[in-house]
Length: 273
Image 1 (cartoon, one colour):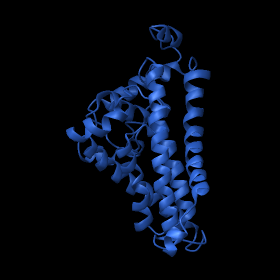
Image 2 (cartoon, rainbow, N blue to C red; image 1 turned 120 degrees about the vertical axis):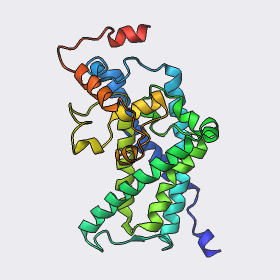
Image 3 (tube, rainbow, N blue to C red; image 1 turned 120 degrees about the horizontal axis):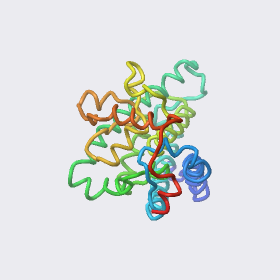
């Protein structure tokens, strides 16, 4: 009973969810305003799909993301509460095992998450689960940053499951999970940005090809049965699930950004259509 009596009250719970939603809106909102409103003409040539999604899609992305954020907040709140009881592998102070280990724990979380995401993502593409759950995320065929966490509630639970997984398996300072979550959010926004920002030759480079690009995940939203990875390209290469035209498509998008390149429609003309 003592454990339950110490559970965070309503005010703490609301504050936690508010903080999570605020971070999400900060990352996604700034990216959307910059690329889809303020500088859309300047960066039009970097738009992977040369068209904009309609307003209905954007509204649905925001609504679904808000539900996901609430679910994330509840699970993270529970995880913090359990951690405060000494039941996870969290430790204090931050430098207890040195700053090298602190950094290593974050890197390890990222690699564990990459594997977790790939295989849960493949599972969600199993036909019954896709129709019932994952299809919600794939309604964004031409995603915007707001699609980063636009999930069905069941998928939101699957996605946030990485937090208790790393909490119970990896020794970590509390701040390490905060850094990991912010990194994950940032890369998710990049993946759903709809614009390619990586430089020419990145996708085919002997070293950088192991890191995914915006084009990689954008192709997944458009074509569905390929490119399942999150941060890295290890599992897609190992399991032969990269789209065969991925590198070529990346190069075409990057080549389009050259000053001498021309497009048939300007952003305003596309919106007018």
